[in-house]
Image (cartoon, rainbow, N blue to C red; front, side):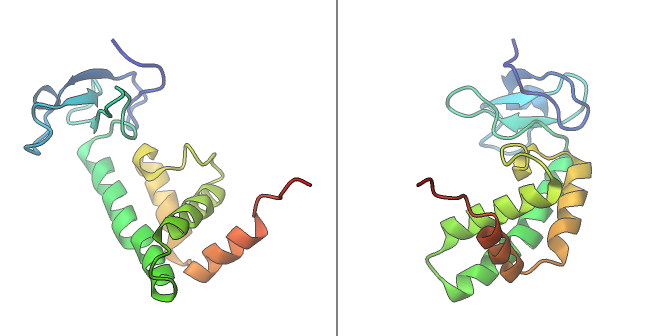
Length: 150
């Protein structure tokens, strides 16, 4: 039984909900938990949220590693730049970086979430963020700020 919209980021196959053990999860807190897994890609899974949806899209180990590196080395680098000037500004910095990334990838914001990217999109995201500074993110936020209705 699969929920609409939960598909493998690596191959595009509709996924099913099973236990972490069946999916090949190695993390102790995931072994007995429910996960969404691809029936064809070995070790392609994503954690299951409390409401039964997937947290991100199921993906294999290489894609999950690419997502983690992207988050750690590019996204957190930009957020770290923001926090030097505004130590309590993490939430706004995260929102701005996410918007900047979605715009750079030309994807809707809900599709540009790192946990939904496949390995090719992770590479594109890396290229988009690699040469960026938080000043670029701020400029983007000011340029594409939603207009207030009168």
